[in-house]
Length: 409
Ligand SMILES: *Cc1c(COP(=O)(O)O)cnc(C)c1O
Image (cartoon, rainbow, N blue to C red; front, side):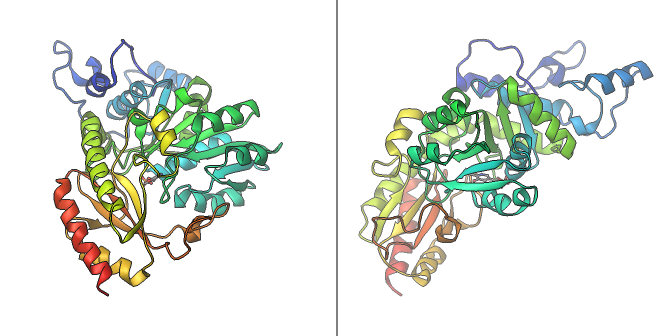
């Protein structure tokens, strides 16, 4: 779905107003009768006559009733809202999960015989897609060190069609020089796809920094309440139509109920992000001062890999970061996790509640190593924290409890 009329509004205002078209929130005589676009559940769309039905087969355009697989007003409202908060976007496609968005974008850009360059700190299911589905379709993946821009340029060959970036990367949280990587790729005819789930469009305006297609797991910040799964891909006009065609061919559609929940989450996303970023900074800085901690991998914290790039390119942060302990063991790490009372143990993030998972990047690195070169090899056990909306002092007290358990094996 492409963006609607665009007045000169700031980001926070767009988050509130985007996607609330009168034809989706009102009824004849009562334009904008309700605030939120209602949930339009439909497989069949009924047409006034056969001429209208036939026109729908020919036109295949956004925002027209035709068949449930092309969505309805609830999904259109969400896609339009996402387009309007993504600077440089012509349109946004919705997918049933973040992983489906990654698959939808890569299957749009890549063809058999192509080479995909993937950042070494990519989300694990992206790596699994490369080793499985993409390989089986005749696509070769090569890996690059996220912090080695010259190495990225050198890795591009004649068959390289696409580069998958992720910044900050999963688990190890390196912020990449996305503008430089995108510029190199463009010059060499390589399409860039960025997994921008960590910062989201309000934190990092990917398309205006040269990226061709930007992906989000809406499951995280947009959903914001740990109760839905969805993904999106936004792009300029050149790629939007192609993404849409692939998505329709694969039969991707999201439920209108989930679209309504995602729209509800979107309205408060910037205040949640602002608060969790402040909380995360406080917790991360406290952890960095602890004797048990070797490194805190948090893009907002000086000393974290790519922190200067974060300062240069980003408008905000989020609550997701990693902590590496000095020495220790798997058992000590698990004792710490189990001692935490306020951090839920579980995957995903982006909700209102804080979470913890073990950190183990070693099996999912190809072009780099874990622990990183030049660091103490004993400092390799860690956790990934998602700091959310609780009082940070309570979270710190909880982590203090956790560190006591870590020490007292
Ligand atoms: C969670 C996540 C995804 C996938 O989202 P799902 O909706 O869980 O499929 C993709 N990329 C990143 C960076 C993520 O953290």
